[in-house]
Length: 91
Image 1 (cartoon, rainbow, N blue to C red):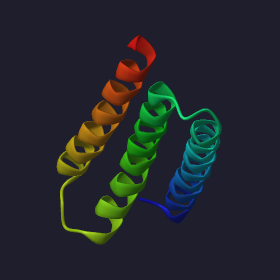
Image 2: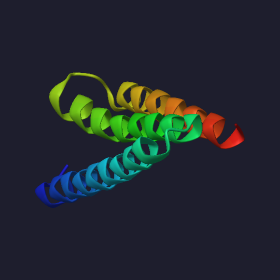
Image 3: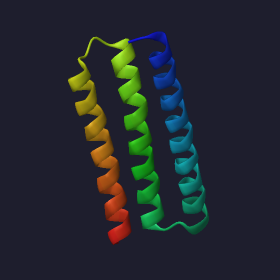
Image 4: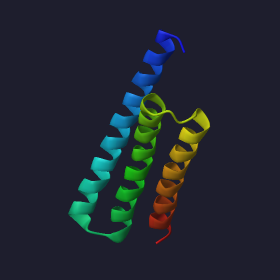
């Protein structure tokens, strides 16, 4: 991968991480104010999704896992986050 693409990847991952953390923080603040189960679950869902973004970049750059293995780990974290979000919306 060229240096410019690596920089673009890192900047994009950084932006996704910041957006995910901001969304999770806003959801946590709403939960702290309202104390409802669906807001608590939504906070956990957003946290799982943000974790998926973070872990994918970390695993690919730091470990010897293949790209496919890294995507599987990311997909599992994202799926868990979406399941928790869906559950919070349906309650």
